[in-house]
Structures are given as C-alpha cells and as structure tokens.
Image (cartoon, rainbow, N blue to C red; front, side, top):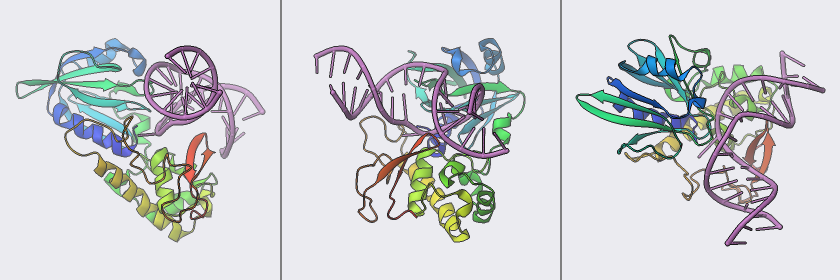
Amino acid sequence: MPELPEVEFARRVIAPVLGGAEIVAVSIRDARILEGSARATEAALLGHRVRAVDRRGKWLRLSLDEGRAFSHLGMTGKWVLAEGDEPLRFERLRVDARKARRTRSLRYLDPRLFGRFLVASEDIPAWRELGPDPLLDGVDADALFDALQRRKAPVKVALLDQTLLAGIGNIQATEALFAAQIDPRRPAASLARREVGRLAKAILRSIERTLSLETGPEIAYVEEPGAPNPFVIYGRQGERCPRCRGPLEKITLAGRGTVLCAACQR
DNA sequence: AACGGAACCTGAAAGC
DNA sequence: TGCTTTCAGGTTCCGT
C-alpha cells in the first residue's frame, strides 16, 4: 500500500496521538520488523515524550525527548488507532501514548513483515539520503532534468530511486508517466527539458490526487480488497486507454509491473 | 559500475 | 469445492 500519499496519511493518523504525548506502553508482538533488539527498542520508547512526527518520502520519523525512531511501512504496513484492548490481525507493534490524561493505542499492522521499525540516536542514513520530497519541497523541474540527464536507466526505474525524489513508488511512477505521456522505458537521459517539465507537474498532481482520496477520519487505505481501483491506468491492463481508447498493456521494468499505453506514451 | 533476478514474507485472487 | 499458481504499492543482496 504505502507510497508517499499513504505514508502521509499514516503520519496524519499518528501525529495527533503521539505528538506531545508520553509513551506509556510498548508491546512488540513480532521482532522481525525491528532492526535492533526488542529490549533496546522498548527501552528507547517507553517513558519518553514524542516531540514531533515527520515524514520524508516513505519514511516516518518520531523525534523523542531523547533519540529518534523510524518507521517504514514496507509493502503492507499501516498504523491504525485501536479502540479496544485486543490485538488486531497482523499486529506487530503496539504503542500506547498519554496526552492530557488520555491514553490512546496505536498499532502497527503488517502482514508481510517487509516494514521496519528502528530506534537511533540521530537521523539514519536512509533518511538523510532521501532526495527532495514532492509534498514538502515541491518538484523542481530543472533539478529533476539535471538528475535524469545523468542516468541511462529507464525513466521509470530512475523515478523509483529514493535519492532522486523521495516517496515515488510503482503506482505513482506509472500514473505520472502516463499523465506526462512519456514511455516508461525511455532512457532517463533521453527526456527533453519540456518533457521533464510535464513529468514534474504530473508527479505532484498524481500524489496530491491520491492523497485527496484518503479522506475522513476513517483509517483505511485506498484500494483495500473489494474497493474500486481509484487509479487512472495502474491495475488496468487489458482495459482501454482513457485518453486514446487504445489498449493498456503491462510490461516488467526492473522487476516491477508497469502499465502503459504505447500509443500515447512516447 | 550496472543490471537482472532472487530473497525477504504472507494473503488474496485467479486459474484449473 | 479445493488445490495450485500468480501476484502484490518496497528494499536489499548477490552473482554476472
């Protein structure tokens, strides 16, 4: 689930609960999501106050009164606010936080266990090395053009590099390249400046559009099982292109499924 | 150095 | 119905 918009949604779920709150209970139900030991992780959280909850790209950062914690949702992770006391399905970590004499319980759910949670005394390399975040920093077309000029990988593969831009995943790359009418297989360096201009706008628009679908207080990701596919071409291989009515095909790039309209993405 | 492929995991959906 | 295969929005490691 999680690309930039979903991780931003997760931030909006946990920030009001954790921000300014004291962590009063920690329960590690599956230590495989941790990088350090369960003991050290618990000790770094328990009894500490959360000063801020930030997001960059697909990473979440908790700034504590002492040290920091980082959460990456991997492929299937999500943070939810729990009402009862029972563990939820796929719950791997539980953090209870008290603020204004009220205690609330956040749960990290992750069926596939690709997510990670770690504590550190300062910013971790994966965080420091992130490129500009489209929501926080905007997408600078000139800078993006320069960066793409130096790469010979397909443009879609380049967009997935988190040091180039932070937060773009398989869906946003697919959607933005379609909106910009650029073939995802094109070598990154082959894009003209004006094409990168279109791409830069398309990236931001696609992210903002996906985020706008994550509405209301309800804790739910877009496109849960059973929900309609909200994307323009992602997951729509075999259907008709919404722009030219041609066929949407699916190829593999860098091991990732990639939907495109070969007629209008050039 | 660069690049494809496998690995890490589990569950849902599609295929037979 | 039920068993098997395929696929999944991320990242990292390994071998060529």
